[in-house]
Length: 201
Image (cartoon, rainbow, N blue to C red; front, side, top):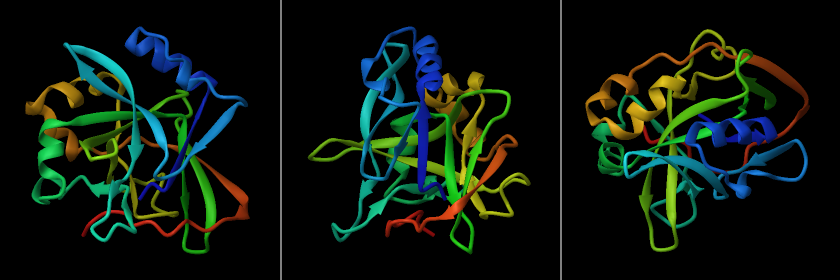
């Protein structure tokens, strides 16, 4: 599960260096901006053999028009008709500074990588009548996450970003990788998640 994430100025600079282009859309007022489901966000895709930044909406429209599908399980994404074609043909990476998760007591924790200001989340996208929408893949939680939640985003290493997006031969292997260890900061405030659908089981 990943129900909200955030980007900051340093994240924007690293994304710009990675794709070797400048995107004014990544520069926001303030040091941090939370991204919620249904909102537009910058993702990395491939264009003419190189990484490209574009904006897409977070979450596939649900079956009844009222819910969003914001996550998909990496272990079963290729077996789900809703996801399979997108995973095979329209993979993307969502660059973030970190993400939030809530435990069973509704206490919020922020997760990030201590040695880097950037996390690369594996995802995929699909075109809908209004816009392109993306979904974040999740994997079983590792030891740095399990006390808060049993799922976590599928995190790619920097050198795995381009193969994930462009090399279909690597797809199944990367879908089953174990994410890196993360640092955790617990918030003292208690916030409830909005009513969104997570992954399909």
